[in-house]
Amino acid sequence: MLTSSAALPLPGSAPRLARVLLVLGLLVSVCFVFITQNTYDTGDSLNHYLYARYAPQHPLNLLHSWAKPLFTLVIMGPSQLGYRALMLFQCLLVAASAWLSYLVARGLRIPYAALAIVFCYAAPDYFHVQFSGLTEPLFGLIVIGSVALAVYDRPAWSTALASWLPFVRSEGFMLLGLWVLYLGWQRQWRVLPLVFLGYAVYSAVGAVVLGEPGWVFGQNAYPTVSQYGHGKRSQYIIGLLYLLGWVISVLVVLGGVSLLGRARDWSLWRSRLFQAELLLIYGSAALFVTAHTVFWYYGLFGSAGLTRVLTMLPPLLAVVALRGLGYLTGLGRTPQAQRAIATGVAALAVVFLFTGLRMSLRWQRDFEAAGDLALARQAAAWYRQQPGTQGKPVVLEHPAVGFALGVDVFDRQARPLAYENKQLQLDRLPVGTMVFWDDWFSVVEGGLPADVLTKNPHYRRRWAAKTLRHPHDAGDGYCEFIVFEKYR
Image 1 (cartoon, helix red, strand yellow):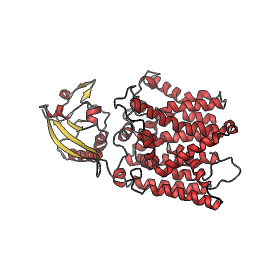
Image 2 (tube, helix red, strand yellow):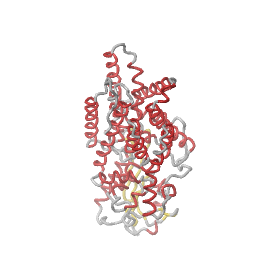
Image 3 (cartoon, helix red, strand yellow):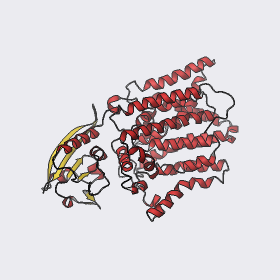
Image 4 (cartoon, one colour):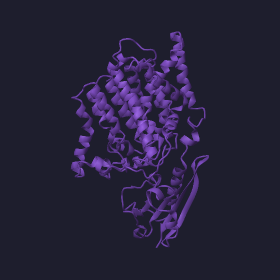
């Protein structure tokens, strides 16, 4: 168990206060698990759940490059109990990350360390990602856990834990480079080989199961040139504002200024704690944002410009925000005034969540069912009411449809593919097959435009609906679902 080695107490860093804040954050999160109708993301979020949910029937899911083998293994258990059980599990991961963020801040001797927990839960997008099936909460937990072990002078354990990062998210390979730099700076040469621990284990598993020891790179799911194009360089900087909200964002900027100020003290550069903070906290955050900016701007490695990937950062950025808070509390002339400033800023970060601004939490956008999820549920309800559908195959590409139908999407008899080996297979599908077409996944991922089915004399349209992608917000347009049946 990690314990602070500091001899002098720090203001606002008492374990009792930290525990109270953590319990409050966790309780609120658990309440929302049973309230929200949103899955944060209706594509990858549900796809990861489906990979884990059906992993016992299809064990190779545990070695799937896109699904991420360690993540699939970790969430397989809760996924057997349903999606809300997975949400509860994600809440526990976020709570553990918030606690580790507090321990890191305390180990670095940062005043008001307990407020790191507040800054984690008050980051709007981080609060929201708890109700997803995405990889970011586990990835963030392993990162902050590895940082905590380094701060508390456990370099071997830190490196061993960090070595598993690439098997939760591919960016883990980049972050491991920072651990190599840190270990080299510390002259921890004996520890250095541990960066290969995770890769060695999964390579051995791949050699036995797949007959391919180099499968980690040989079966990489991300093409060098992204099929989603490219975009603006400002995408992820703006995404950080949505992730953190204005209050915490300002604190993070001040925390960066604080680092520049402290870096002028050359004696600090010999400090193990300063080295860990510089490389593993500031370095990890900067590298992550910069890399995704480059990937999106140049259209590399399957980047789709999705800023939700930033939701692994709040446990790290909460520590940076505390450094920024130190700037503000320094304005107080007495301990009482400094406590008042710290309390006021933390309260303001929480209040920001309820301001109704685009970067805060909004009920309809964040907790009501997204349009495509609502349509998938309607289509599934209609399908179940049709006579003789039991046991008939269904074609689908949208993960929300597989989720709503409760079908094993990896069973090729239950869910055959309409597009395979770069060719349409519509004529090979058995009579009675229902094709659940949607205007995004079916077209982009499944290679199946609607007019191909409309013009095919063997298929007829049975059900259709169209709605806003986001409830009460026409800004992102409409989504459309159509169900076709092969009837001859």
